Amino acid sequence: MKMAKNYKFWFCTGSQDLYGDACLAKVAEHSKIIVENLNKSGVLPYEVVWKPTLITNELIRRTFNEANGDEECAGVITWMHTFSPAKSWIIGLQEYRKPLCHLHTQFNEELPYDTIDMDFMNENQSAHGDREYGHIVSRMGIERKVIVGHWTFPAVQEKLAEWMRTAIGVIESSHIRVCRFGDNMNNVAVTEGDKVEAQIKFGWEIDHYCVNDVVEYVDAVSKGDTDALVEEYYSKYKIIDEGRNLDEFKKHVAVQAQQEIGIEKFLVDNNYHAIVTHFGMLGGLKQLPGLSIQRLMEKGYGFGAEGDWKVAAMVRMMKLMTAGTKDAKGTSMMEDYTYNLVPGKEGILQSHMLEVCPSVADGEIGIKVCPLSMGNREDPARLVFTSKTGPAVATSLIDLGNRFRLLINAVDCKKVERPMPKLPVGTAFWTPQPDLATGAEAWILAGGAHHTAFSYDLTVDQMVDWASAMGIESVVIDKDTTIRNFKNELRWNAASYK
Ligand code: MN
Image (cartoon, rainbow, N blue to C red):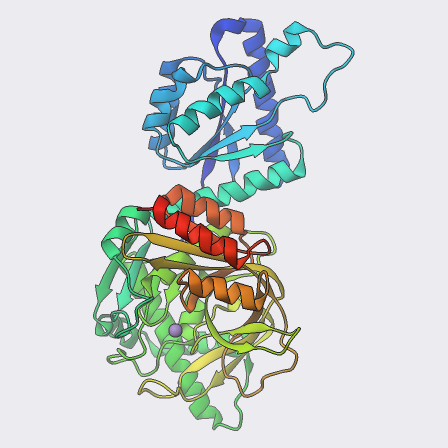
């Protein structure tokens, strides 16, 4: 699966020619040292590229336009080492179209008490120059991330790393193509939405195919290729036959292997990165894609069930944002299914009919073949597992008719108290912050869906920054949420986002 390009981020230092060549040489030297050390830190997921100091309107304009035109440039990090009159930045900023970060740092960490003089002050005045620059970016209403602190601080480097991943989500959003087999499930409201507006806002292309277009691809997969993949499944996953005939079990698994190969070939041939299925529109498919979709999600494809193209695109986008994360814990579509309401043990059991991504799995993954209570096909094979513990984010992008809103809930994933041997699906279990009652009430008041795009590897702030960059409303439900304030926030947002 093709993930993101080999992206880079440009580091642009602002100054002016008022200070003379000796000072400008120092400015360049300092910014080179910062870039070199940021790259050496091992914290940043993408390379930072040093650019010559920006000192004139012409150079600023040219550099921003080169950043626009460079396919590998995913964003620009700006820093004013000295003072850079901000009128010089207006045209360049106006023409710039990629994610922008303002790193508000300075070269030295501590005041050089014994040696400081006016020359030092004039050479090292980020506190001064960065305010002038910040003013014009705010006046122009340009969305940007401001990160404050010394460039060697791990917290600063980690914020920069997080912003880089958000920037990848922004840049890659307009390359996401979603393939829909079947429409949204009849009469379901929250999975619907304005696909034209989604393309305008997010750049998503959301196309529709007849399910039998992919059936042709599935049927064309050779027995040899299918059997080889079945062997891979059998070596990788635990077979939980539950007394079924072993040959019959394997035949059911083979149907999903054939689907995995056929659907992926269709997606590759037609350049799609996310897929939507519908259990009521299966055409010539023998089984609802279960194990096959789970494996495709693990490879990096987005997925939404019952025609939910918003979730499919969000899962793909979040997989791109988290690609290459060290010790990644996983990203998946989820669905709020059923509650545990026992006081002190409250939580929401997360799952779907079949399609939970095994990237979130904790420990052993098994294969089961079980009947589906809905749909009219043979018993589908699926991967079963429980998920990791720890903090995560659950997001829901909804269409309110006049705008999109992204709900972002910080959740704490836990183990359920006891095994659930009869449940034939992958699951997760979490308590929404600040607690189940408040979290669920806020979610419902904000109009959040039952389907979510979920990740252990992204933070609330990253998703908020992504929404801001896309120009849409976001609301956060986390440890600071109170219902009274949250209802007011929704009211204020309704006035602000028209
Ligand atoms: Mn569903």
